[in-house]
Image (tube, rainbow, N blue to C red; front, side, top):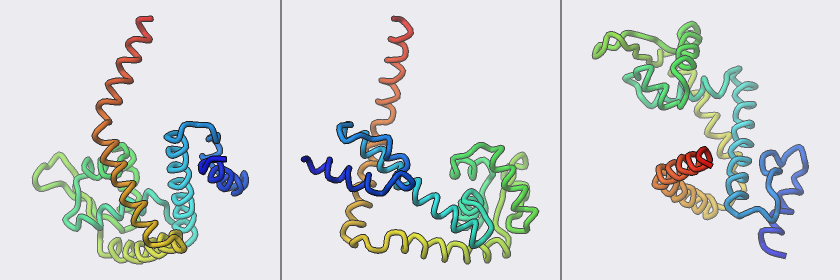
Length: 189
């Protein structure tokens, strides 16, 4: 039996209620497919746990937390269109969330002095204080989730994921061009 088959069986032992996206993989799938599905499964599992904890502990959502986190990193505030790019969501999503957070007194919205057509949003004192409490617990939750993994494994995983990010970024245009070429070939056939 290969190392991958043994590892695959180990993950399958999690049971149907925990395996999630990785259940799509088969032991004979290409390693790249299994890596992709495992990354998705790990990311989704962590995200679900963080979402649940934010909801239970602070009666808030992950999108609200992420929004406040971006503003916390930019004390001078951000234009709403820039915030939208940082959060990787549409402007409409940011507008709706901004409306809620302004109403809750966590965010202020003001016209941008450099471009009167744009809005700049920033944390209020109340928003900064509430986010600081959430952020401290959030960090402890993450520490708890990764507790038990040896430090060397965490450092190796972090370095490997960094290499993957660089690799994917460098090859993104190449992969898109190949996909478009294949689509054009399919359309001609």
